[in-house]
View (cartoon, one colour):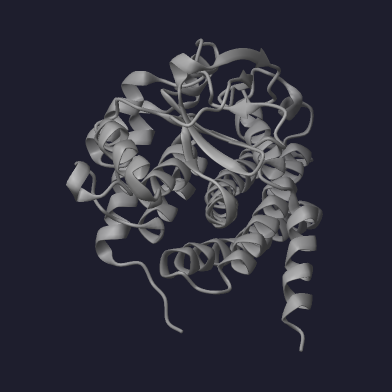
Length: 344
């Protein structure tokens, strides 16, 4: 099968990169980390004006009406740029759930929330009962929360938040206390099993895309430092051991990237192997980002351990997201389970 992004998709990524280079410098990321939310409302508004926030919202509600294949490049670029805004939770998780919500309740939810998402007025957080804390809950206007196999859409005014420590300064965590009710119920029973399974697959793909971008940035930072830092009268990048470490990390990133793209395509087309592809993507992206972080830290040496150096902004994102929605070991075990179930 031949797969390639078209000119419009590549141009959209280029526009996001240009915006990030102006509005999401390391200094901007540090400023966001020091803020109450961990991200910037003005930058979110700029992303909404560009169409990034509403990319998966249907045109009926003011969005672009595009799919996960269109979004995957933007999520990867968000990781590369270090954008702290909650894009995965909103465009890859929340919007598709609301778009597919069944019955009259689904229609009400779409009318109430999707237009506001597209224009940048609403952020969505997603939490499962297996999660000790929900990322992005503080600052979200709508929370999609699972309890006892049911999925609920809960407005921020109906929850109580208790902040919890977070490794990544832009990925704030909070314990969410709330009470389910018929008015918040989105889906239950067998339908809920399917919706929650699809949500987990989209999360694996979306977080995997961000991880690929993070890993790419870490390798690039390490390679540049290896060119600039000299020892024994030579750039350390000329030493074979350093070259091998960087090459190994880069190869891992290049292998993970097409797996993430494949997962996005499978999810968009309803491929029966979408769950398999999503878990393969998350496992490989988590491994790639973890290796890239370790390699970048080794190449930078002592300076890489300091708060003053920008490296930790991407390393902490890599470590946090590598474990989010299932770490590499969890998804490799799931791949094995799916493949064994296919055996005659």
